[in-house]
Length: 263
Image 1 (tube, rainbow, N blue to C red):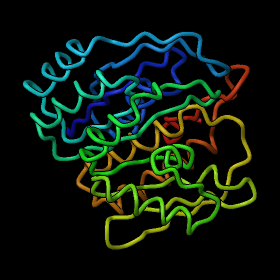
Image 2 (image 1 turned 90 degrees about the horizontal axis):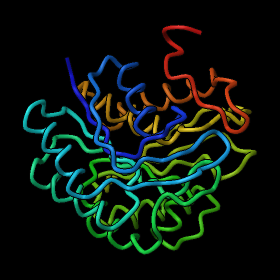
Image 3 (image 1 turned 30 degrees about the vertical axis):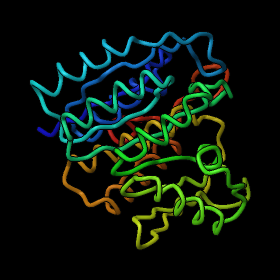
Image 4 (image 1 turned 45 degrees about the vertical axis):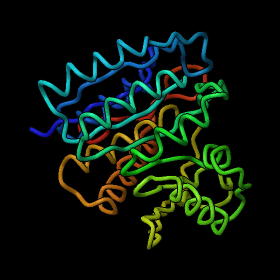
């Protein structure tokens, strides 16, 4: 059986973070493992509190996994502080996993910041160069580059700039571009652009979509797919998960990670 590990924050309401990643791995028939970087008290409406795990405990979790069950792919999500980022970066450089998908999580669905603003340069300098695939959404790409993104050409310009910071591939997600447009994502590998387009699904239940999408890419890489194929398969998976989204909670409900197995 193929294996994958998620290095991210824990969402107690189950729709995002570690919980969403493990569900996604399971849906792809991948044995999932986890390294918790932060415990987040959140639900479909708001983030109540965040407690970071110590850098040494983050590194010890990573050591425990890599020395015993080396993962076929790694997904990295919420890293709230510079110390946390440095701890993860050191271990990734030591263990050198084959596939690393990094989702630069900055803000929760409800608008609460999940990354300390002063940590941006650490993210750019230490985390971005470790990514085989980096998956920013438009607000995250704007924060990283300083570019205002309003068009597809803006997305391509930002993807080029982010690629120059070290990631092997940049998948810029276009969901925030316009409510009137289809959901279009752009993958840039340093030479070519690939475009992935689906019809926009009219629903408020999109809690954890970024986490789910990036972990689905990692799962498909673990299964031996090429990067363009992994993104394509993951795009289909997240689209179906959103289309079968669950009416749970009072805010942005979760996607349905196991739509293929039960309705």
